Length: 489
Image 1 (cartoon, helix red, strand yellow):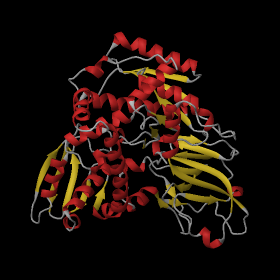
Image 2: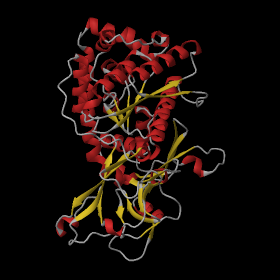
Image 3: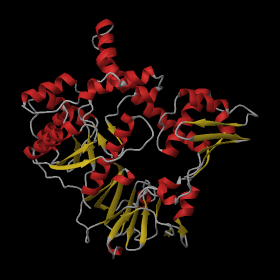
Image 4: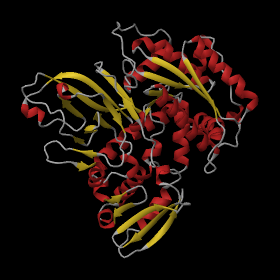
């Protein structure tokens, strides 16, 4: 499956509309879009998302974008849902964009209503993107939303990660082109372009914490202390986001050192390693390891992390019951995490869904394949063969293949039990299960890593190991280059 191919068009002049110009700068600053991207715009019918869809249609020729709209009826306000769906459908039709709509029929029982709706909405967008070949999802969060999020996290006692606010770009392929725009700018844009929108009455309900922050606390602080508070909070978020990224990158090797073992059921951390580090480092490594293992840190607060640090004291054995039915147990030199036992069921329910993408044969190069399940894309192109010494130091994010030896159609799919690899430079074959175990890759993550195959032969475990098939000799002039890249890059 190739992404929409870009046309070589001259660069249009800067947009005359002030909000369009701001959004263009934001997209360029954060490298949100690339030529030929397919973008799914999440549109509720409210002012922010309606403006976003119109803005992206205006800016689309710059990147030769393919655009679509996704609208989810949460099923909570039947009297307004039909009006909102009609508004979204009408806008999509006027902008010549495909409109994908669905209605939510059930929600998970646990967690706050706001959080459950958010998670289901994101899942809907990702399902539509995967089914229809969109490699980016654009959402309408703006600067006022970001300021509210930062203030809410501050009130809850968050660390740097929480104060980083709403990221402009987030995996898998989620972008927020309005993140630098103010709510007033968006409303003015809608008025200038005569774009209709719906207002959700629940946004005025002071029973929700976010609404109290929006309508009471932020106006009070702005009027009493700093009229530029929204800009200040956004600047704080930006600084925290940059520092958070730097710290995570530099501490990742330490996190790997602290992990003794990890699979779908358990995470074991080495207590002597953790205990040897300063307390701030312990906090961060605990959070990083738990986020990588279970995919989130929902409801895990500062008090829980401090309680976990208490289990690192020499000779201290015991256990803690943490949110989301997570249990931590200290036993000698190991701090083990697992979830409370659930009714017995097949392990397959806990694993990501399998995926497979068959590539056109012969290959129509250059080609870009978006793989939302793995949060990456693969770029295929012909490239000159480098000198022998350069061949030996290719990074793990790209490989070169001799196209003459590829005599079957290529595909990219997820791991299957029994998969074997003939590693490059080694005799015999190796089970992928053993490769993953040696690299300490948790079971759910194993099923997300893409495999590139020629027929039934694995050519590349993306980002981990190249196979022996289709080797490139120095005498070859041109080779097929395959490069992996994160979707949010």
